[in-house]
Length: 273
Image 1: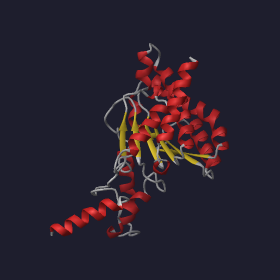
Image 2: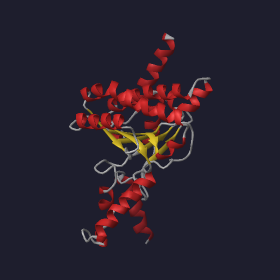
Image 3: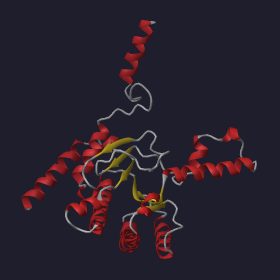
Image 4: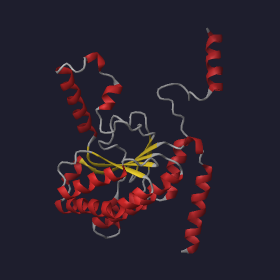
């Protein structure tokens, strides 16, 4: 076991050293998928997978801070998750409460600000109270932002923002010509938070599952077959390394930072003309 741990630590160190410290994504979003399947594969109840998933999230928060990522947004409970068996939904709600009660003081001590994004109205009052207290306790923290998406759906968020803008327009508070991306962003639940540069999805599913549909427009997407409870520091650093190997063009031809390419490219165009 010691040899295995030593090998893992060496691999972590090697990967961390290979990263470009100037190109760490400021905001990473994660679809933490595969808890239930992980447990079933081991012949365990699905609840064991969810408990293990919490432990993994705690480690990923630590690593994110260590590499100087600024914002981590995780998909904890979607609007579609209510369709799961009632027993599992109840377990998840109780798990949220238990984890928050246990961890919020530590998060606050580490200067982590926690935000909950989604429609919290269906949740029990006990959970809503803990959420409200957690947000108030950490709201002034500047070191790191953890966004937890609970009862969140991207389509629902866009519809709500659209309705708010429509009401403002019909009441004369704004003109149709005032509607632009900046105004639309201001009505989203993520207002004031930079869009994610990188989306990581575990478990191999190749879809974004109604997650941050507006915000992920230009995010790099990294999909791994690893189930969330098996997602380690090595796997996380692999995702960052893969992100850094890509050329983010935002619809252009080449990275705007590559001045030599731009000079040679546009020079060749002028010669051809």
